[in-house]
Image 1 (cartoon, rainbow, N blue to C red):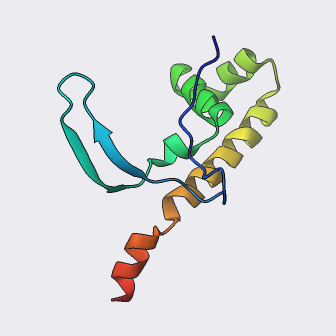
Image 2: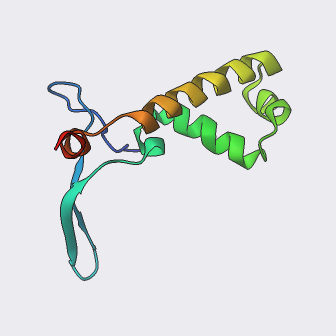
Length: 103
């Protein structure tokens, strides 16, 4: 069974999707608004798996290299790329927040 992932990009224009409604599956209580996705949720499935493996290996890049069957420098480069990706995702200004700062 294929694992479904949360869509983070608009299939039409490619922009980052926003959450409008959250609903409880038990009592049907709902919260509506304009919520951005956390940076980790906006990573690709491969990036999320890498991050999860990093945490599960207690941050040991040597252990992570063993898990992936690659060299330490390869893992270090992949981590550096992930760090840059997370930095760019956490410094993006949302359109709603941009309007507030211009007012």
